[in-house]
Length: 108
Image 1 (cartoon, rainbow, N blue to C red):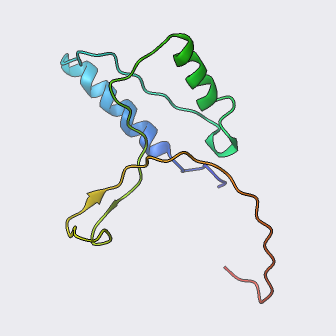
Image 2: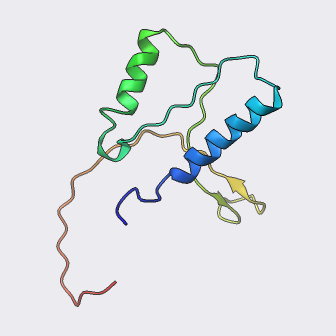
């Protein structure tokens, strides 16, 4: 097990499964649907997301809307909402270098 061993693979399987169901139903969307999946998001996406964005820009692809992987479904953590709410990620990822020193007994 390492970083990314499980990470977001459930979303890949869910998205491809949904597309398979749509295709099997014959009930196709009126607009073209794109699913973009990168393989290197944890290391700046140079060969994944950046290449996908470059290709879409070269093709002058225009989107009606974009959905990302989002995050989790939570209940009772957003003021004013008691019902479960599916959170949608809408910020760009970045990185930060931090130097951290900890003293104390190790453990997990």
